Structures are given as C-alpha cells and as structure tokens.
Amino acid sequence: MKRVLQIIAILLISFNLQAQNSEKARNLLDQVSAKVKSYSNISIDFKYSLSNPKENLNQESKGSVVMQGNKYVLNFMGITKIYDGKKIYSIVPEDEEISISKADENDEDAVTPSKMLTFFNHGFKYNWDITQNVKGRKIQYIRLVPTSSKDDRKEVFLGIDVQTKHIYNLMEIGKNGSKTTITVNSFKTNQPLSKNQFTFAESKYPNYYINKID
Image (cartoon, rainbow, N blue to C red; front, top):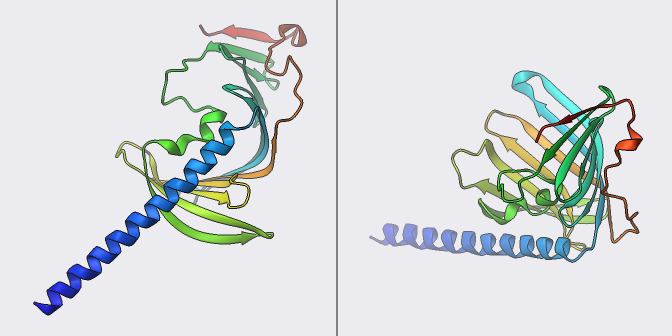
C-alpha cells in the first residue's frame, strides 16, 4: 500500500510539473504573437534546410520576406511571390512565367509568411524544452506536438530569443524522418517601405508569359 501511494504521489507531481511547463510555454508563445502584431511591418532574411537520411536528401537555400499585415513579398528558391491583399503573383525568372491567382483568406490550411510567425496558436500541445546560448543570445525552445493525427509533422521545435521575443529558428520533424529547419539571420521591423512595395507591375516583365489561374 505504501508503495502504491508513493507511485501515485510521483505521478501527481509529474503531472503538475508538466502542466506548469505547458503553461510557461503557452505564455512565451503569447508574448511572441503579441510582439509580431505590434509591428507595422517585418523584414526577414532566413536560411532554409531540408534533410532526410532515408531518402538521401539534403537541400539548403536562402530567402527573404517583407510583410505588412497580410501582404508580403517573398523571395525563395529563385521565385518571387507578391501578395497585394487580393491576388498572389508568382514570378519565375528562369521560365519567364508569371502565375496570378486569387487567395482565400478564410483558408485555414493556406500557408503564408505571416502565418509562419503565428502558426503555433492552434493545433498543438506545448512543452517547455531546452535553453541554448547562441552567440550570447539566450534561446528558449518550445516543443510543439500536433494534436491532429493527420498532421505530417511528428513534432516542431521553436527557438525563441528570450530578450527580444523574436523567433530565432524553427525545426520541423516529419513522421517520414525529414527535418526542415528555418533559421532567421536578420529580423528588422518598422522599416520605411515604398508605397508600391506590394504592387505587381506587369510592365516590368514585357517578355513573360502570364498565366491567370483564376
């Protein structure tokens, strides 16, 4: 009987600590979301890597994105995407082709740069993870586990700069063994932007084939 009571006590303590860790993680993520929403615009330079030992896959690339509200200009893997609040313009210089499509703001599954900074608000369980010192910066990791069994991700680790409350990096571990990492090299806010920053000018691409999808 004494042994059983000891086990129950340990389980209760463990459950209580887990609940406290989950609450700490949620509070930090709330601070990150609030910080992102406080800026008029955000400019990010980032490094992207994808690896999967099972498939002998190893890719690396760099990119940049400028965001203001739901509008953005994304440069990644040789493609520029402009979203002006209504339509997405995908510009592919290699093929001299531009695709124009409408965006559904009500599509919760649609992945946009702005959602990448707040994706963690729904659909995850949160756990307080390790803390690392990166070039004098204290990076606190939060482990996120998808609540949906249909999610292809096994877990996600979000590294947050404790001082600035900015995201430092994001690591997604797939159920298929893949690992995707996005590391922020530069995070600038409230920069002076051109009034045409998020405007697509067809005149700049006179020889491009334009594909109007919808």
